[in-house]
Length: 279
Ligand code: AMP
Ligand code: ZN
Ligand code: FE
Ligand code: FE
Image (cartoon, rainbow, N blue to C red; front, top):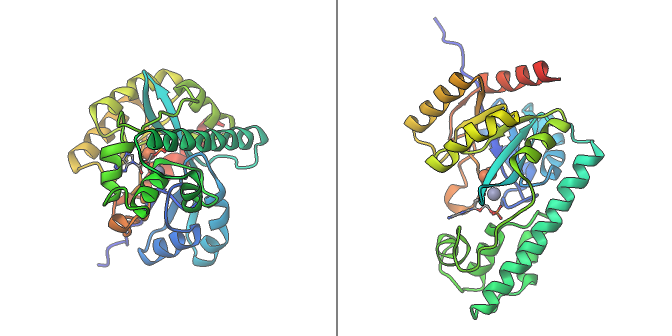
C-alpha cells in the first residue's frame, strides 16, 4: 500500500529584503527544488521580500505565507517575534515597519561609529552597498568587516565586535512585547515567539502569554530534537500553537538551510485555525 506523501513547510526564511543573501525569487526556487509545500518569508521589519516572491511562488505552485520578524526589547534583552498571515496593506503597519527600517539605518551608523572609535576604518557606504535595499542588520556589518579584511570570518565579526555586548554592539530599542504583539494583531496576524531555544528566551513564553502571544517556534535550525519536543509540549500545555522554519539567511555555510528543518504541514493548519478563531 502506498504511503501518503508527507508535506513539509519552512516558515522562517530571510531574503535580500533584510539580511539574507538570497533574492526572494531564489528562495522560492530552492523551496520548490526541496519539494516544500509552503514557505513564509519573514524578513526583519520588511514585507518587500514576500511581495517580490509572490509571482514566482504562483508560477512554481508553492504556497507563500505573508510573514515578518519584529524585534522586541524585554528586560533589557532582544527577542524576536514572528507575525504570520498578516494583512500587508494596512497603512499604519507599513508606516511602522518603515520607521523600524529607518531606526536600523541609524543603528547601523552608530555601530560603524563605534567601530571607527576602535580604530577600524569601516565606512557606512560599504555597509550600505552590501545591504542594498534591505533593512540594515548586523549581518551586513559582519559581511562588510570580512570584505574589508578587518576580520577573517563572519563568525569572528560577531565574536569580536557585533555579538550581544561585544565592543561595537548597539541594541535596538523600539518595541515592547505588548506593542509587538498588538502590532501583529492589528494586521490580523498570528504572533509567534521566534526561536525560544534557550532558557532566557523560553522563559519569555510565560511573560508574553498574558499579552496575547499565539504560538512558539518549536522547529528551528538551532533547536535539537529535545528542544523541539519540549517546546511543542510547552505550547500544548499553555494552549499555544507551534510552528517552525530554518531561519535561512543564505550565507555560504547555511546556503542549503531551506527545507532542512522538517516542519510538518499541520503547523500551517494550526496558524490558519488561530487566524480564523481570532478574527
Ligand atoms: P540584528 O537584527 O541587526 O540585531 O541582527 C540579528 C541577526 O544577526 C540574526 O538574525 C542572526 O542572523 C545574526 N546573528 C546574531 N548573532 C549572531 C552570532 N553570534 N553569530 C552569527 N550571526 C549572528
Ligand atoms: Zn536575520
Ligand atoms: Fe530571529
Ligand atoms: Fe530570523
